[in-house]
Length: 349
Image (cartoon, rainbow, N blue to C red; front, side):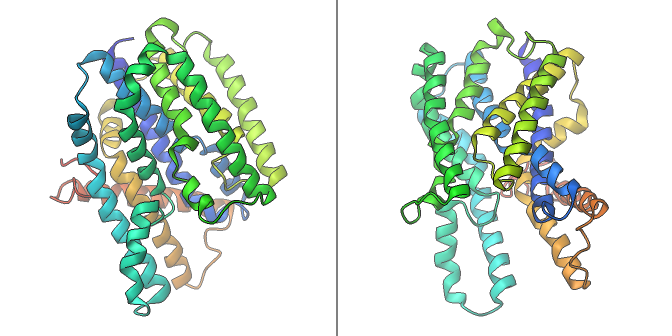
């Protein structure tokens, strides 16, 4: 598989993960109100893990084709794109939430809350992902050498770290396992919880030419494995009422199977990305940062119309997802034609 083929695969997978994130957040309030909301939300649970797998895959894959950048240059290149948008969107969401819930009261809390949101990635429900990526970018230059020398060992070690962390957080959520103060909040952004996905991406990038991990098994077999993993996730979510969690062992299994199934399908059908997919992939970070604003605008609109149940039916849930997607893409298309594109996380057109 050549480098261009790998990049096209990543473009398509990045778009799939972006759509899945939008599906998760646009159905979050409808999970217990409609079957479309519930099953759509669970189906999309591969989204954040797939982003992390792709991040490790892309970084390690590029290092196979070019000289390793010194740490300073690596950090400058990586953080140049994500830090400023993260700060700006944290400020935006912090202000929106404050004035929505408090109006002009308690304005003295805005600044300290904003600093806390920046540190913890909880300015809004999706921003924690950027804090995780920042940690993994900081870590990558230190582990890429040893990982290249012992990829299998590092992959197993990363699983030995992430799996217990995820299991403990899962038990905390479903059984009330006691945690010290703030541990639960910090654990969502702690890199040990997520590092397996990142290392799996690195492993697949380095072993792709030798193993063809996703092509060695026929795609119908991967589809069967994927269906089994999804069934386990659905069963787990029902039995433990953990349908709002993305941190649990069944999600690990489902996310890995989703990644490998999609890779297998792309390899088998020789899918081409095309201009639209390339554009969506290029603007995926902006779309990721922007979409909750659109989803919550729809919620605000339903409340303003006196129809809080507007999105509660199966048809309403689907409409909310599609409208969130459409409004987000329209807003992104406008933003990338302005000087605000890069500061907000997009690529100027």
